[in-house]
Amino acid sequence: LSNSRRRLQIHLLQALAVEYRQAFNDLFTKCQGEKRGVLEQIKEKVSRTKSILNELAIQEDVPEPQTHDHEDDQAVLNVKDREIKAEKWISPEERKVMEEAQRKEEERQRLLRENDAGTRALNQMMGGTLKTKK
Image (cartoon, rainbow, N blue to C red; front, side, top):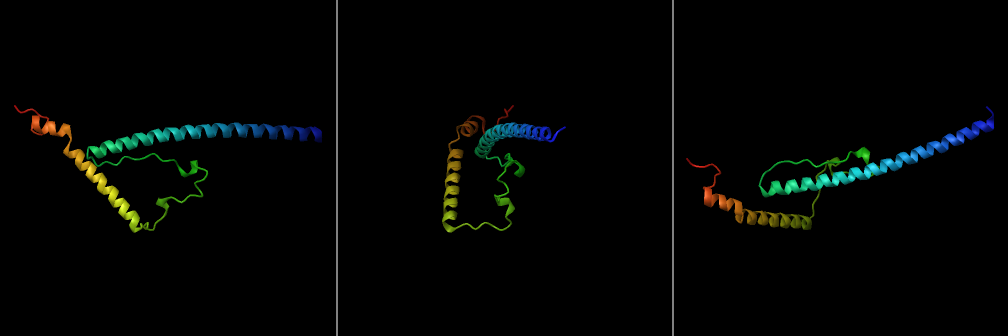
C-alpha cells in the first residue's frame, strides 16, 4: 500500500465513522423523546391515581417514575434537593402561602366528604354496610 492510498482509506473510514455516529445520535435522540413522552403519560396516570386515593381518603404511597442521572446530559450541572442534607429555609411569606393552600385543600376535602352521595345513600338505605341482614 502506498502512503496516498493509506491516507485516502483513513479519510474514508473517518467519514464513515462520522456517519455512523450521526445516525446513532439521531436514533438516540428519538428514543429519548419517546421515553420522555411515555414517562409523562405515566406521571399523569400516577397523579390521577393519587387524586383518586386522596378522595377516597386512602393513605398509600404511589412511586413516581424518575429518569436516572446518567440519562440526562445536564445532570452534572444540576443539584437535586435529595443531595442537600441541610433543612430548606422557608420564608414567612412562603409559609403563609403553603398554610393557606393546605387550609383550602382541607376545606375542599371536608366539603367532598359532607356531600358524598354514595356514602349518604349507603347510610340511608343500607345502614352504613354493604352486607345484607338475615
